[in-house]
Length: 255
Image (cartoon, rainbow, N blue to C red; front, side, top):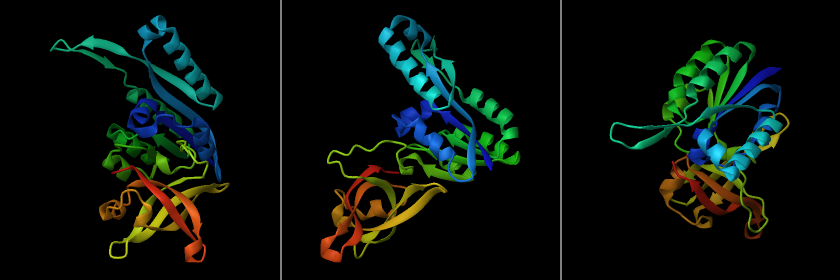
């Protein structure tokens, strides 16, 4: 059984495409297969002055903290600091990177696997240190993820591709998936979308055929880049022997 720790750089995730992330889904992900979640830490910012002065902000923030704790996360708060720089401009700062790094290094002695949610390249050295301690480090991020961080990790997975981690708005009630394009043929305008489904043993990759005519933006360059993320419906095409295809394709995250 793999002992897993989850460490969330909440401010980075929130500002880089992960606003509204479902922490309960993250817990389920950490417990799939032969893995059990032993530690779960979430590092976030709080404006102490605003907490005292703004009841609505305080209520909303503490309700959010309660949800995290109910999901099994330890909440580590970094209070926002306000200061005036040399040019007289008011600046705010609340960086919990050091807290996350120290906790992960200390707790890694009892862990086999670490899931790190961030896109911040400042954590590259942490990733390498954890690997040298014998831990497998998996990074999950949304937008603006450091290329060097992706390369340093044992694996990188776009948070958009984890089923349910970031809810999809389904106006018509149809089930939609998120995936990336692979094996696109520019001459014939078709390829495949790779996406994931959740199974008890872990995330399982699936592929489905698509034609560029089913996308609202049919630029070939978008389908040639396998880091671009699309939303789509999986349907059976009655005009093609009920073949399973991706329809109603929309680009949601361009690399």
